[in-house]
Amino acid sequence: MNKNNYYNEAIKKAIEGGYNKRPSGYDDDKYRMRVILDPLFWQALGKALGWGIEFADMVCCICGTHCFRNGDRNRTHFMERPIYLWQHYAHQYFDLVLTGRDTDKFWKELLNNPYDR
Picture 1 (cartoon, rainbow, N blue to C red):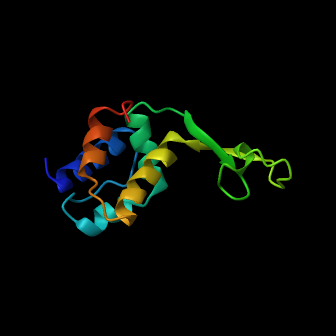
Picture 2 (spheres, one colour):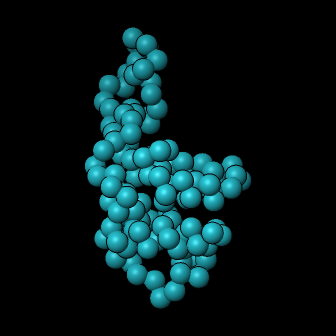
């Protein structure tokens, strides 16, 4: 399966999960990139893949890091917020894109084995 097919399959799954921005055609790269940037796409994809509302991690509300785990007794940040699975997988995808790595393996594994990641 080529890269466009992975994107198309992910978009189809998201539509199954309730994503309502139906395309006129999946072959438009600009459309695909707008979809990938949409948080509602990732939420709907998660619903279709059975992620529910589970969360992957907790991060600091102030700085977005794990500062509360570093054992810093003088920290000024005390509130935590969840990182949901859809956010976790979106971050993984964007990390690959931003570092110039191939996203094909990501999509293949995500679409075929959503809990094995």
